[in-house]
Image (cartoon, rainbow, N blue to C red; front, side, top):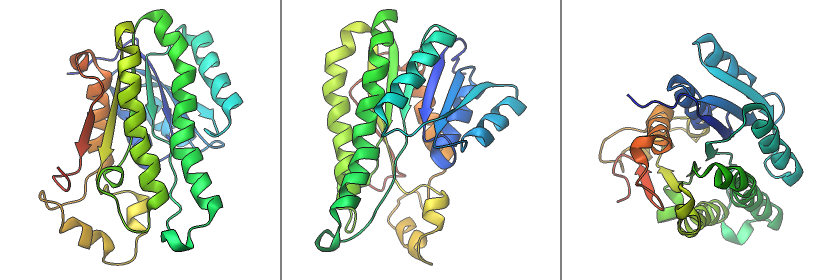
Length: 246
């Protein structure tokens, strides 16, 4: 069993779906989790973790606010003396065909999905370098690998995360910091359930394993990458997509 006891993890977008599952899974393996989301949205995630005997704190965070990101990271290090794991999970979608896409929707998706990951990652680098170790794990998407009509902005942001991680992995490997990407396929979340009737079933037909993934499928992969068992893995994209894209 993976053991993250004594580790401190910051998870963005931890209020629901994949982010909540990641926070819960890391806590179940012994990590102290800082569950970050807009407003007080992560409090339910934290309550669930504490109810199960885990350690967690909620943090109100708009990931597009650089000052707020810096404050969350510095506060975490001040309280706990370290930060070992960052999971860049926060993200949004503003889907539209390219011909009709508004510049504001492009900017919002890039700011939340890509630039915010840069901000969070840069903020944790100094303490991780000082402690000579850390795990940076970013949630991309199968869409960033294979594309999807109507999601030019989303695909660009998710593909950008992959390039960022591969470059950074080379920068910080000598400091004991690993940088990896998890690229989920179609996962059974509130977002996919909100798709038009029959859409998720159509997607499932493209998946060799014959089903949508679960948030736990993604969370288990993140937990492995955060562990000592994955200490020799860096600069990689781990696909959790049921064989949908290989």
